[in-house]
Length: 164
Length: 259
Image 1 (cartoon, one colour):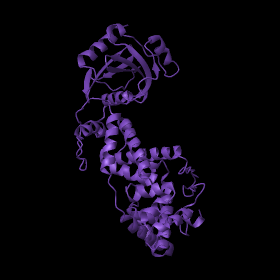
Image 2 (tube, rainbow over the protein chains, first blue to last red; image 1 turned 60 degrees about the vertical axis):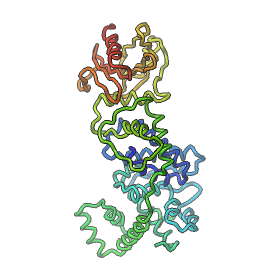
Image 3 (cartoon, rainbow over the protein chains, first blue to last red; image 1 turned 90 degrees about the vertical axis):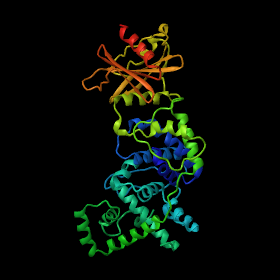
Image 4 (cartoon, each protein chain N blue to C red; image 1 turned 180 degrees about the horizontal axis):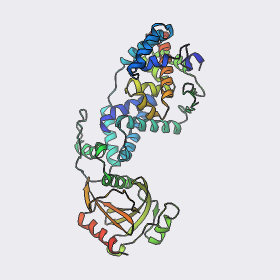
């Protein structure tokens, strides 16, 4: 798993948006990976490790003050309409807040966590749809629509920023 | 979240395919069909342009390496989590880690690598037994029922498992029973009995012998752990420990000659 430490670190950073929290998640995830590695029977160890990072991060978010607890409610029909709105915020508001930073990273970081993780796994970790579906335990249709929404939000926000 | 943003439907069902094509997820035939469609669809053309801009934006982002200090801390934590005091030989491929430097990390890396970089392909059943044992050695994982009394340990398995494992105590012979737990091996729940010899812990995995149970010809040494296997009274027995080979053999012999 060590060859994939950087990938794990990056995902933890993107999910936690905080260096210290990311390190906690990274440590915990690596220990879990060590513990469960013998049972790993998949083909892509990186995707497997990222799944552990992701689950660890979600667990940590749930424990910590509920800031990022966005329940993943799948509607299940075409996988295209899952509700992803955080209770106290919506993506546009979050993106608006991020505008001042003038940075792509901040725009990505402002995405709701489900959209963010999907986008990061695709764009930065370059996982396939199928691997993302496995890592996030989400149907492929939902992965596709999340990616789409993430990119749309990003494109609009970048336009507003004059970044694109 | 407004509708225009929350759903991929700015008027054309095909936009997700446009995206899939750019993500390299579309086979040649559907890609050709999509191209034909796109020629006459302004929405898909716009979507494609949008996606390409976003991609350009994101591709410019640097991929961050784990900071060295954090890497060191992670490695230290992993060493804690790994079994103690056993510079196990690295099996399988060895990965080169370019950015680990200094701090006498070599030993840490060797120990962690042994566990982290064993390629999954070469797992055989004895490896699984050893891995299970290593997992169990982590704090809090060793016993579900802690007792030196076989008459406490044996009934503990009732209702937790669909067979009655034989439980023996060899305290008189220097292998006191410490307890038991449930484990999972060979695709089924198994009984794990825990014994101790001086500072060494011994796991005995027991489950009914079935048709396709992987066999080991007697004994093996894996990652510094010794493994002994036998079958008796319709049960599979696998015992694993960092005890020396001859001592583990003695332990196994005790089992085999105790009715």
